[in-house]
Length: 339
Image 1: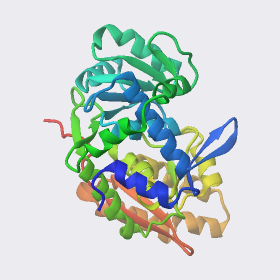
Image 2 (image 1 turned 60 degrees about the vertical axis):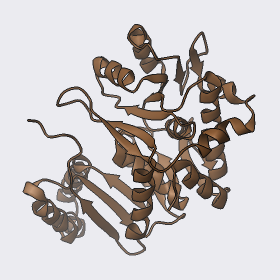
Image 3 (image 1 turned 30 degrees about the horizontal axis):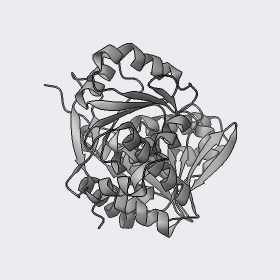
């Protein structure tokens, strides 16, 4: 068992240095980052935080759709001893302000100029915020940084500066903050320790038979701990490769391109897949109709009926083996119940 997230990723990056870790579309073509490059970008972001003067346990707010820079900002904050806090892209401006205030965000990392403008409008209410980093586009001016310009803030730091932060971390230290969506009131922060992350991510490996050959696809909100575990931390244990969907709308096409061996979804995703299969099956020849309405479809309906209170499974991971797709389902609340 690894004590901290940085120690886990250091081992994986060393063991699988030349293997692909991340793949994302850039100008219509898949671009690959190896595990060595993945860790290098993470460490550069961590050093940039130190170069800016970010202290341990200060917040780093992250807002945007799934992409490699989201991973590097999150892991970089953890390596620097800071505390990442993801924000749903659908969060209201008032709740964005609340989360950034509550986590005492010293840095906000945003996907594009749209979210930059949102944070700029909130700046007078965010006394701890020292800089905004834009993952894609934007230009450096005052305390707003384009991605590469921000990374350069740490290039001149001595090597031991970051090492001191890493050595000071322990398994029980706060690793990340996960905020609820705010549908039942103000968003609530859940404190996740390093041990929480390393234990869960390591424990699921034998359950699903994961290995460095596995392909994951990241498309659900990374502000949710489930997506972080599946597409960020689990590959970090086994050295698998995470592909980033271009968007939710492009997910079907990306699935055909990537053919992931591990696919994670929440109830609405499976319901859409089922509805799509049934709609296509109704128009298909007899053999294809059997696929849409046969054992697989009946198994899904059985899983739905057997779930607590008749609800659909709240989390399901698919793993494709050489001869079939194995499904595992888990149930549990992902937010506080309303009074």
